[in-house]
Amino acid sequence: MTTSADKPSRLYAKGRVLGFTRAKRNTKEHTSLLQIEGVQTTESAEFYLGKRVAYVYRAKREVDGSKVRAIWGRITRSHGNSGVVRAKFRSNLPPKSFGASVRVVRI
Image (tube, rainbow, N blue to C red; front, top):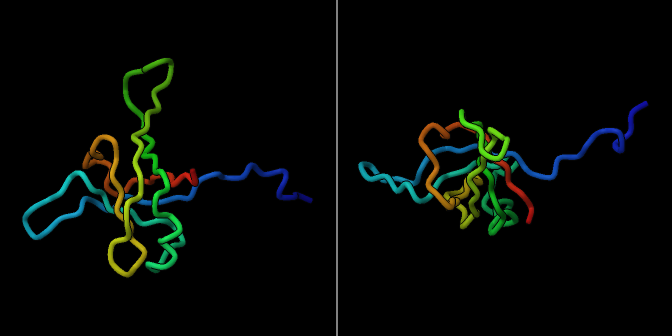
């Protein structure tokens, strides 16, 4: 019989990068749109405002013995009524991150 103590617990919530905030023709690369797993309303998204976000990816070249890198950001506000949130990262996310997963850390 397995208990919850046997399995390691995840200390972050999963999210997905939807893209940049944009208008019909203009794109604002400094703000990204994220959909957090299990968040469907603006009210439930309020819990995550101010939380830190990490976009973790693998690079080709090793730095300090690791190919894994991260771009950190912070959730700034909600976007619309379906639980999507806006986030600003230290450096703008690359367009190849669209559709990729992010980690919402509860710091």
